[in-house]
Amino acid sequence: MTMTRRFAWLPALALFSVALPAAAQSEKTSEQLFLEAKADVQAGRLDEACPKFEASHRVSQNVGALLSWADCEEQRGRLATALRLWEDGGRRVANETDRRDYVASRINALKPRVPAWTISVGNPAAQNAKITIDGKAIQLGSDPVLVDPGDHIVTATADGMKAETKTVQAVESKSETVVVFAPAAETTNAPSRPIEPRPEAPTDSSASTLKIAGWITGAIGLGGAAAFGATAGVIADRCDLEGTNADGEPLDGNGCPSGSQGLLVGNAVTLGVGIAGLGVGVGLLIAGFTQKSGSEDVAIVAGPGDVGIGIAWSFGRP
Image (cartoon, rainbow, N blue to C red; front, side, top):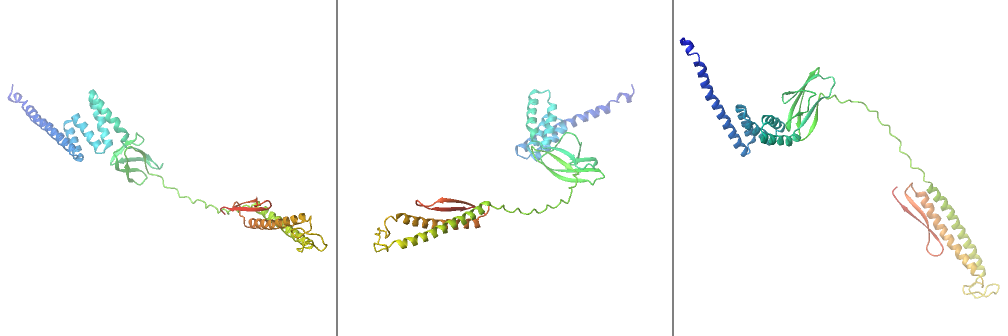
């Protein structure tokens, strides 16, 4: 055996001996990062703790560091990120009953809280559209995109279209459609609506009826007044206050011949009819001339006493 062949394994041995301390150093660094991250969580410094859990996991690929990282991201509100980490951890502990069930319960509780976006291209002219969210490309037509709550930069490009960039806010527990290349709003000159003439209020027949009734009732009142004057003249001729009239007939207590009670009653009745007729007639005429459609209710009512009529009306909205 030559000297060269005898010592050919030395470089490999040297490399192996160097790799062991390096690996040990990496594990130590991962543990330090993990412990520091736990201390940050207890102190409420989640923005410092989560990157340390991430670094610890990347160095060691330890599932404990992965699950702690998922819990940290969920606590600081990065729900879609946390869900992806929990699902990755669930695959890693699929053969461990206790941790598998625990991880599954965390996933089921978290899923409804994660915002989900459906990306839609609104303009059919946008061909070969490419969409990114925070610089990460997404596949159009796939399942809804899960995003962390908060503002995100959505960028869209397409053949023959001007690139579009906008900020869209994702809200916890809310699913929505984000439209890119929305078609321009159509501007059409809507025909002006013709001004329709205001319909005239229908003529209320009740007003005409009131006028007619007023004239008739007033005429009756005038007739009653005329009759009262005629009977008063007769009474004046037949009655006297001296106890006898011109014919020497004895008079009663009213200064009239005995048996003239009918004449006196008739005179009183004509007076009442005349006064009532004139009063009601004037009232009906006023109501007829002033009434507006649907504005008054008019009724003829019995007056006080044994004889007489009256009119009543109420005014509503014009």
